[in-house]
Image 1 (tube, one colour):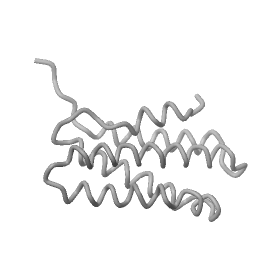
Image 2 (cartoon, rainbow, N blue to C red):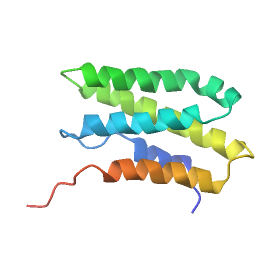
Image 3 (cartoon, rainbow, N blue to C red):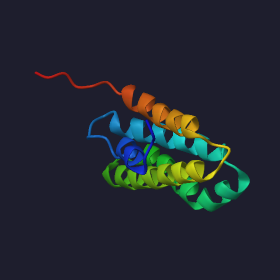
Image 4 (tube, rainbow, N blue to C red):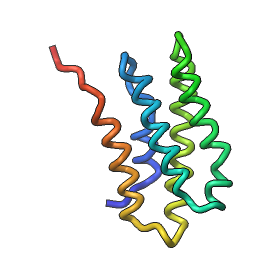
Length: 120
């Protein structure tokens, strides 16, 4: 199954509100930042502003009492960096479908760590 920008965007969008949402957004940011660090030098340089925005957004979210705005900003930064990483991986011959799917799987594992609400 090929990974598309849409599927990455779907995985990095802001989760529904709740106590777990900020922690999840920070974990996704951490995952994406780690993936950015693994890219080649030219791609890291190109995506550095996005990686910086993700890192700063995660730090800001941790320190905010009212996190709604910070959550939205971090969700947007996460999406932009995820899309950039996926594009970089698709255009680099050293990366194949397997590595791109590994990114998708890693993001999905982060989403799966959040407890789901049970229907009443």
